[in-house]
Image: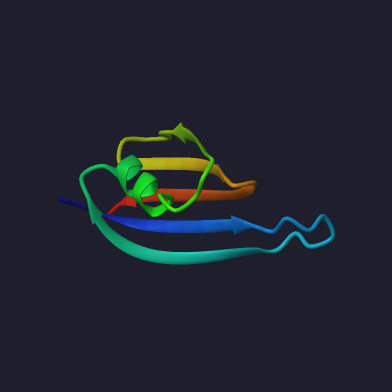
Length: 76
């Protein structure tokens, strides 16, 4: 399994507040997208947009039940 640094950002829905919640975690997975899908399994509607910037880096912009999030994986 590969080890990644995961940055999980949750964007604030209030228009007057541009702050976001950010969590840093080290995860082991062979499939970052499957990790994100498993993380979001409790949500009813999920839309995932994937972007691979460089080899070993994956970014998933997610809308889950109207909440915007970003999962950024960087291989360690």
